[in-house]
Length: 130
Length: 130
DNA sequence: TTGTAATTACGAAAAACTTCGTATATATTT
DNA sequence: AAATATATACGAAGTTTTTCGTAATTACAA
View 1 (cartoon, rainbow over the protein chains, first blue to last red):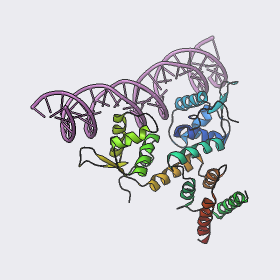
View 2 (cartoon, helix red, strand yellow; view 1 turned 90 degrees about the vertical axis):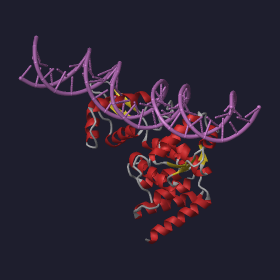
View 3 (cartoon, each protein chain N blue to C red; view 1 turned 90 degrees about the horizontal axis):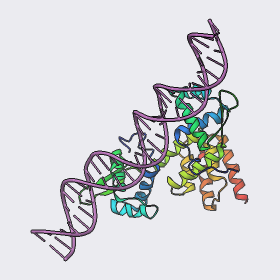
């Protein structure tokens, strides 16, 4: 259960998402480690990453272990929860609440693997049973 | 066909989306009309709306007819195009490119009407045929 | 016609987000 | 032990977005 997380916290900015992504993917990291990974994507100063992560910790997006000199940061939220919240927001503000339109848009104009297709069919099956 | 539209233009801010939504829904509007509608949702000053719409026009998000004293503003982009662009962005930055995860998330935990279900099935059918 | 209301243009303050420099502390190396 | 390297804290500058006040202009009404 998520508690003490404000609505805004659940809608991270693009820069915050970059950091969350890396932490979700590569587990708990020090600032140094994260900054190195970030710099494989674009040039960012060390203290910039540090400051971002400190702010994100304050906002409740990250937690950190300060036992050692190099603090170790972890994401405070599960990807599903952030994804769900952002998608709801996009649904409301961009798609005027039209969920099937969103899904169509997500599927249409794109190559979908047969694997994805069967996943989808399974899900639909499950929904029809209710 | 979209011309001279930068990547950023296609990713409007939340405030810009509010205005686009109203224009998409209620057709071309004067600043006064739009500001009235906006104020049914939240308190916004008239000149705030005016400035936003002027900036959005400059960015290429809106067009305007200045023939009369009260300029008449229209959206410059079709909802589908903006929606598609934003969804691609969310897919990349929030869902790490995992499209079926996004679709599952959009469908899961929510009531989907039987109508939406058959729409979906039809779409899947179509995709399987290719 | 003179004053009142409504409109646009525009500058700039306010707020939110991003970036970094500097100071300070802690560890490591020579 | 002294010099060097690495870490955190923190203030503040830089950017972008949002908000609004004021001035100038145009229409409308008394």
